[in-house]
Length: 53
Image (spheres, rainbow, N blue to C red):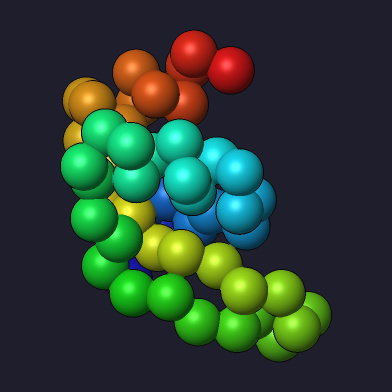
């Protein structure tokens, strides 16, 4: 898996912000650390959202 093509979101507030733009995650899971994450494909739109912070 080429991790550079994906964004692993561990922040619930950021996930909710991404949701507001209608971007759907690929999957959600629990990391080995016990934290939930959401996996997104990196797109131009997602990059714009992430750069707003």
